Image (cartoon, rainbow, N blue to C red; front, side, top):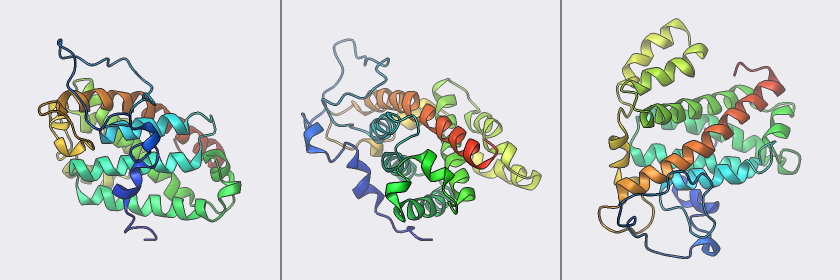
Length: 243
Protein backbone atom coordinates (compact mmCIF):
# COMPACT_ATOMS: atom_id res chain seq x y z
CA UNK A 1 0.00 0.00 0.00
CA UNK A 2 1.27 3.40 -1.02
CA UNK A 3 1.39 5.09 2.36
CA UNK A 4 1.07 2.24 4.82
CA UNK A 5 4.08 3.51 6.75
CA UNK A 6 2.81 7.11 7.06
CA UNK A 7 3.86 8.89 10.23
CA UNK A 8 0.41 9.86 11.45
CA UNK A 9 1.44 10.80 14.94
CA UNK A 10 3.98 13.30 13.65
CA UNK A 11 1.58 14.93 11.20
CA UNK A 12 -1.78 14.84 12.98
CA UNK A 13 -1.12 18.14 14.71
CA UNK A 14 -0.74 20.13 11.50
CA UNK A 15 -4.24 21.53 12.00
CA UNK A 16 -3.58 22.73 15.50
CA UNK A 17 -1.58 20.55 17.85
CA UNK A 18 1.82 21.62 16.56
CA UNK A 19 0.68 25.13 15.60
CA UNK A 20 2.55 27.38 18.03
CA UNK A 21 0.25 30.30 17.30
CA UNK A 22 -2.61 28.34 18.83
CA UNK A 23 -0.84 27.20 21.96
CA UNK A 24 -1.46 29.71 24.70
CA UNK A 25 -1.01 27.28 27.55
CA UNK A 26 1.21 24.25 27.91
CA UNK A 27 -0.67 22.73 30.78
CA UNK A 28 -4.36 21.92 31.06
CA UNK A 29 -6.04 22.56 34.40
CA UNK A 30 -9.00 20.74 35.88
CA UNK A 31 -12.59 22.02 35.52
CA UNK A 32 -14.07 24.59 37.86
CA UNK A 33 -15.20 23.87 41.41
CA UNK A 34 -18.35 22.20 40.10
CA UNK A 35 -16.23 19.74 38.19
CA UNK A 36 -17.97 20.41 34.87
CA UNK A 37 -17.00 21.46 31.38
CA UNK A 38 -19.13 23.42 28.93
CA UNK A 39 -20.18 20.47 26.81
CA UNK A 40 -22.25 22.75 24.57
CA UNK A 41 -19.17 24.36 23.03
CA UNK A 42 -19.26 22.96 19.51
CA UNK A 43 -16.49 24.93 17.80
CA UNK A 44 -12.98 24.44 19.19
CA UNK A 45 -11.49 27.66 20.45
CA UNK A 46 -8.53 29.08 18.57
CA UNK A 47 -7.24 30.38 21.89
CA UNK A 48 -5.79 27.01 22.83
CA UNK A 49 -4.65 23.89 21.04
CA UNK A 50 -6.61 20.65 21.28
CA UNK A 51 -5.48 18.59 24.23
CA UNK A 52 -6.79 15.20 23.11
CA UNK A 53 -7.02 13.29 19.85
CA UNK A 54 -10.72 14.13 19.80
CA UNK A 55 -9.90 17.82 20.01
CA UNK A 56 -7.63 17.49 16.99
CA UNK A 57 -10.40 15.71 15.06
CA UNK A 58 -12.88 18.44 15.97
CA UNK A 59 -10.59 21.27 15.01
CA UNK A 60 -9.61 19.78 11.64
CA UNK A 61 -13.23 18.94 10.85
CA UNK A 62 -14.32 22.49 11.66
CA UNK A 63 -11.63 23.92 9.41
CA UNK A 64 -12.43 21.56 6.53
CA UNK A 65 -16.13 22.40 6.77
CA UNK A 66 -15.60 26.12 6.31
CA UNK A 67 -15.95 25.31 2.60
CA UNK A 68 -19.22 23.50 1.90
CA UNK A 69 -17.36 21.52 -0.78
CA UNK A 70 -14.93 20.44 1.99
CA UNK A 71 -11.31 21.54 1.82
CA UNK A 72 -9.37 18.46 0.78
CA UNK A 73 -6.06 19.18 2.53
CA UNK A 74 -7.73 19.77 5.88
CA UNK A 75 -10.10 16.85 5.34
CA UNK A 76 -7.08 14.56 5.01
CA UNK A 77 -5.65 16.00 8.24
CA UNK A 78 -8.94 15.21 9.96
CA UNK A 79 -8.63 11.67 8.63
CA UNK A 80 -5.13 11.38 10.11
CA UNK A 81 -6.40 12.64 13.45
CA UNK A 82 -9.10 9.97 13.27
CA UNK A 83 -6.41 7.34 12.61
CA UNK A 84 -4.56 8.59 15.67
CA UNK A 85 -7.68 7.79 17.69
CA UNK A 86 -7.72 4.25 16.29
CA UNK A 87 -4.08 3.62 17.21
CA UNK A 88 -4.13 5.28 20.62
CA UNK A 89 -7.36 3.59 21.64
CA UNK A 90 -5.94 0.26 20.53
CA UNK A 91 -8.54 -1.00 18.07
CA UNK A 92 -7.98 -4.23 16.13
CA UNK A 93 -5.13 -3.93 13.63
CA UNK A 94 -7.53 -4.91 10.86
CA UNK A 95 -9.28 -1.54 11.13
CA UNK A 96 -6.02 0.38 10.91
CA UNK A 97 -4.75 -1.59 7.92
CA UNK A 98 -8.06 -1.10 6.15
CA UNK A 99 -7.91 2.64 6.83
CA UNK A 100 -4.31 2.87 5.61
CA UNK A 101 -5.11 1.14 2.33
CA UNK A 102 -8.05 3.41 1.57
CA UNK A 103 -6.48 6.61 2.87
CA UNK A 104 -3.21 5.95 1.04
CA UNK A 105 -4.90 5.65 -2.33
CA UNK A 106 -6.99 8.77 -1.73
CA UNK A 107 -4.01 10.81 -0.56
CA UNK A 108 -1.86 9.72 -3.50
CA UNK A 109 -4.51 10.74 -6.02
CA UNK A 110 -5.01 14.10 -4.33
CA UNK A 111 -1.28 14.81 -4.32
CA UNK A 112 -1.14 14.08 -8.04
CA UNK A 113 -2.86 17.39 -8.79
CA UNK A 114 -3.66 19.34 -5.63
CA UNK A 115 -4.58 22.53 -7.49
CA UNK A 116 -7.47 20.89 -9.35
CA UNK A 117 -8.51 18.59 -6.47
CA UNK A 118 -8.49 21.19 -3.71
CA UNK A 119 -11.95 20.27 -2.43
CA UNK A 120 -13.53 16.88 -1.88
CA UNK A 121 -16.18 17.81 -4.46
CA UNK A 122 -13.50 18.50 -7.08
CA UNK A 123 -11.64 15.36 -6.08
CA UNK A 124 -14.72 13.14 -6.41
CA UNK A 125 -15.60 14.56 -9.84
CA UNK A 126 -12.12 13.97 -11.23
CA UNK A 127 -11.85 11.15 -13.73
CA UNK A 128 -9.78 8.29 -12.37
CA UNK A 129 -10.23 9.04 -8.67
CA UNK A 130 -10.10 5.82 -6.60
CA UNK A 131 -13.86 5.73 -6.15
CA UNK A 132 -14.03 2.45 -4.26
CA UNK A 133 -11.27 3.46 -1.86
CA UNK A 134 -12.84 6.88 -1.31
CA UNK A 135 -16.21 5.32 -0.54
CA UNK A 136 -14.78 2.79 1.91
CA UNK A 137 -12.61 5.40 3.61
CA UNK A 138 -15.74 7.44 4.32
CA UNK A 139 -17.86 4.44 5.28
CA UNK A 140 -15.27 3.12 7.72
CA UNK A 141 -14.95 6.45 9.49
CA UNK A 142 -18.73 6.89 9.52
CA UNK A 143 -19.07 3.51 11.22
CA UNK A 144 -16.66 4.33 14.04
CA UNK A 145 -18.10 7.80 14.56
CA UNK A 146 -21.57 6.27 14.78
CA UNK A 147 -20.24 3.77 17.34
CA UNK A 148 -19.03 6.68 19.47
CA UNK A 149 -22.30 8.56 19.05
CA UNK A 150 -24.23 5.53 20.24
CA UNK A 151 -21.81 5.00 23.14
CA UNK A 152 -22.35 8.62 24.22
CA UNK A 153 -26.10 8.08 23.87
CA UNK A 154 -25.84 5.21 26.35
CA UNK A 155 -26.52 2.40 23.87
CA UNK A 156 -25.20 -0.80 25.47
CA UNK A 157 -24.96 -2.46 22.06
CA UNK A 158 -23.41 0.52 20.30
CA UNK A 159 -21.28 -1.53 17.92
CA UNK A 160 -24.19 -3.58 16.62
CA UNK A 161 -26.46 -0.54 16.33
CA UNK A 162 -23.80 1.42 14.44
CA UNK A 163 -23.08 -1.50 12.14
CA UNK A 164 -26.73 -1.86 11.19
CA UNK A 165 -26.94 1.88 10.49
CA UNK A 166 -23.78 2.09 8.38
CA UNK A 167 -21.75 -0.86 7.07
CA UNK A 168 -24.44 -3.53 7.02
CA UNK A 169 -26.07 -2.34 3.81
CA UNK A 170 -22.71 -2.42 2.01
CA UNK A 171 -21.77 -5.96 3.10
CA UNK A 172 -22.68 -9.35 1.74
CA UNK A 173 -24.48 -11.89 3.90
CA UNK A 174 -21.16 -13.59 4.62
CA UNK A 175 -19.52 -10.32 5.62
CA UNK A 176 -22.43 -9.49 7.91
CA UNK A 177 -22.04 -12.87 9.60
CA UNK A 178 -18.28 -12.36 9.98
CA UNK A 179 -18.83 -8.90 11.47
CA UNK A 180 -20.09 -10.47 14.69
CA UNK A 181 -16.49 -11.31 15.64
CA UNK A 182 -15.08 -7.76 15.48
CA UNK A 183 -18.13 -6.04 16.95
CA UNK A 184 -17.40 -7.61 20.33
CA UNK A 185 -14.09 -5.70 20.49
CA UNK A 186 -15.64 -2.25 20.14
CA UNK A 187 -16.16 0.13 23.10
CA UNK A 188 -19.43 -0.42 24.93
CA UNK A 189 -19.37 2.47 27.39
CA UNK A 190 -18.31 6.09 27.57
CA UNK A 191 -16.18 5.24 30.59
CA UNK A 192 -14.12 2.80 28.51
CA UNK A 193 -13.25 5.59 26.08
CA UNK A 194 -12.75 8.34 28.65
CA UNK A 195 -10.43 6.17 30.72
CA UNK A 196 -8.03 5.76 27.77
CA UNK A 197 -5.37 8.19 28.97
CA UNK A 198 -3.34 7.66 25.77
CA UNK A 199 -5.90 9.81 23.96
CA UNK A 200 -4.50 12.84 25.83
CA UNK A 201 -1.85 14.70 23.83
CA UNK A 202 -0.72 17.44 26.22
CA UNK A 203 0.25 17.76 29.89
CA UNK A 204 -2.79 17.90 32.20
CA UNK A 205 -3.43 17.79 35.91
CA UNK A 206 -3.66 14.32 37.38
CA UNK A 207 -7.17 12.91 37.26
CA UNK A 208 -8.48 15.31 34.63
CA UNK A 209 -8.30 13.06 31.61
CA UNK A 210 -11.83 11.62 31.83
CA UNK A 211 -13.57 14.99 31.85
CA UNK A 212 -11.27 16.35 29.17
CA UNK A 213 -11.74 13.40 26.82
CA UNK A 214 -15.50 13.57 27.35
CA UNK A 215 -15.59 17.28 26.49
CA UNK A 216 -13.48 17.05 23.35
CA UNK A 217 -15.14 13.82 22.21
CA UNK A 218 -18.47 15.66 22.23
CA UNK A 219 -16.93 18.44 20.15
CA UNK A 220 -15.61 15.84 17.69
CA UNK A 221 -19.04 14.22 17.39
CA UNK A 222 -20.67 17.62 16.84
CA UNK A 223 -18.24 18.56 14.06
CA UNK A 224 -16.63 15.48 12.50
CA UNK A 225 -19.87 13.50 12.13
CA UNK A 226 -21.72 16.17 10.07
CA UNK A 227 -18.62 16.72 7.94
CA UNK A 228 -18.46 12.99 7.21
CA UNK A 229 -22.14 12.83 6.25
CA UNK A 230 -21.62 15.79 3.93
CA UNK A 231 -18.56 14.08 2.43
CA UNK A 232 -20.54 10.88 1.85
CA UNK A 233 -23.30 12.88 0.14
CA UNK A 234 -20.76 14.71 -2.06
CA UNK A 235 -19.15 11.43 -3.07
CA UNK A 236 -22.53 9.82 -3.80
CA UNK A 237 -23.66 12.77 -5.94
CA UNK A 238 -20.44 12.74 -7.95
CA UNK A 239 -20.02 9.00 -8.41
CA UNK A 240 -23.35 7.34 -7.74
CA UNK A 241 -21.83 5.40 -4.84
CA UNK A 242 -24.37 4.08 -2.35
CA UNK A 243 -24.32 6.44 0.68
